[in-house]
Structure formats: structure tokens, C-alpha cells
Amino acid sequence: MFRSLGALVGDLLVALLFVAVGLVQHGTPLTTQNLVLVGWPFALGVLLGHLAIRAWRAPFRIWPHGVFVWAITLASAMALRTLFSAGTEVSFVIVTAVVTAVGMLGWRAVALYATRGERRTPAAAPTSVGDSSV
Image 1 (tube, one colour):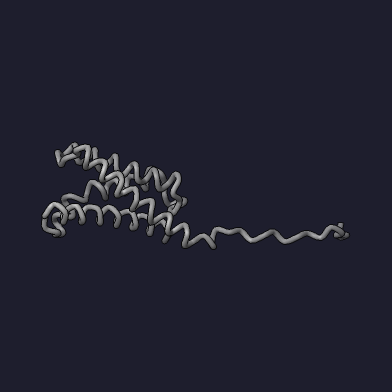
Image 2 (cartoon, rainbow, N blue to C red):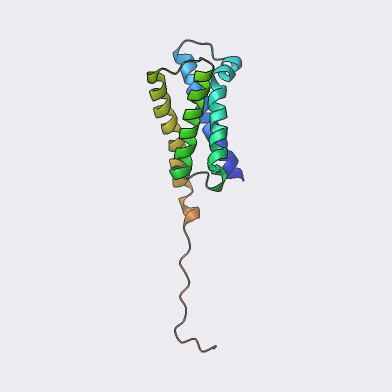
């Protein structure tokens, strides 16, 4: 439960950071209103991605969960931006794809590495060959 929520928050933070850096790079004031106006398509895309792939089943997996959440986020955000005439130039789509992929898949790689000990299965206990309890 907490990992699923953490994965959702992690992806939303990547999207929010991407939007915030973009606003600063383009000289737009970094206000809550601007973050919401520019960021809502990305946030909705993250939510759709998590629901579509049912990311709560394995929230830190890069394949297929992370890749599909990223792809659905990207496609949804670009579709919504196109629908509302917010701009989807090819260069913007490429930069968005690369930056969000590095962010969304990168934090998952770190999380997988950090939790690697939890996924190891203990070695099976040896059984005795001469068990005469039968």
C-alpha cells in the first residue's frame, strides 16, 4: 500500500519538477497557478498510467510497469496539450519524453537497488536423506 502510494507520489514529483524547470527556463513565474495550469495534463497522465497498468501490483518495477506508466503519461499529456492548444512541437515532445523517462525510470532503478535485499528468497533448508518417519 505505502509503496504504491510512494510510486504515485514519485511519478507526480517527476512531472512537477519537469514542469517547474520548464517554467523557470522559459522565464515564467514559478507560482502555484502556473504549476497547475501547465502541470495538470502531466498529473492526469500519471494517474491514468498508474490505473491502466495497475501499478500498485509492482510499483518499483521498471518493466513493464514503469515503462508503461511513463508512456501513458507522455501520450496522455501530449494529447491533452494538443486538445487545449497548449503546444506540442516535436522538440518539446522529444525533450519531455527523454526527461520524464530518465526521471520516472531512474527513481525506480534507485528504489529497486535500495530494496534488493527484501526480494531475496532465503535458501531452502536441506532435507535429510535418511528420514525414517514414514
